[in-house]
Length: 326
Image 1 (spheres, helix red, strand yellow):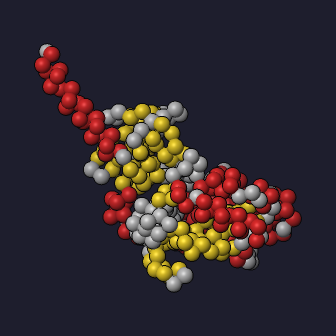
Image 2 (cartoon, one colour):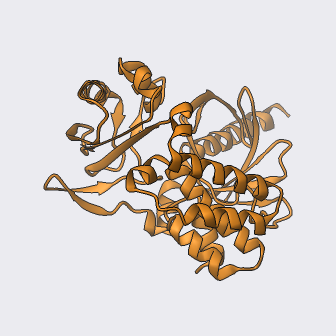
Image 3 (cartoon, rainbow, N blue to C red):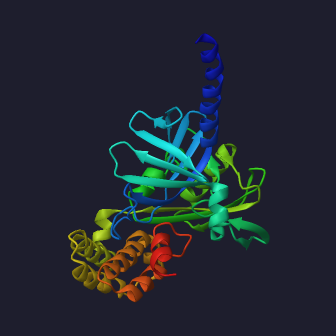
């Protein structure tokens, strides 16, 4: 038996290494089904969303959070989760313990081949031809904290700014060789904050890596909301109140009632500044209005709302567009 054991061990070891090697890199969620193969309900919170798993050695990164993982030929074990996995052609198929769903992932290159609309588009920025980042193509930020946390801890006036109603947006080029240039404050807050942010950004250059291989146009937006100040602004208060009323009805599956409240919200005359600040609530209103109409069989109206909410490159709405509006 000993010679057989010595023969089998390297074969098994090689198989384990091959499995773990294949996991390495970034995987993008393609779809989710129940274990029975049935689709999720249209109002399920995970029907259309973005999830990316990045494996580097024995580290798993999800939503900018890195954890150490123990990986064998069929399981990925982290301090909080146990994931069962297997491969089927290009798909990485994952099922979490005690979860009734199956998650289908594609490697980034395979995802691009299947969905070419996610290839970054060219644009002219400050006289240069660059490629716009999107939800899939983003620079890597190799630091113990994600970029937002880095800014929070390295911009001295961040706390005072965050306690007030403020909106900030900055754009820049991250070159193919990982250098930052053409920094432009699109929407500033104050000379002090703007300059501190730009200084923190340049100091963080060494942590950025452009894996796309071509010059990228990167934009960061920060929305600060003061509850007390917001409650005194009539338009913002209307948006929040109607969103809460509609959301309460939606959560109770009172789709007709939810649609009535969302229609009131979406009929408001909203200026560009408020649209920018309240973007999340406004997009959520369009998306949920679309789902509610879909649940009631109003497919044409539903697709109108979905198309207003986003396009096929917007993960919050892409599965609705693919499944019902093609």
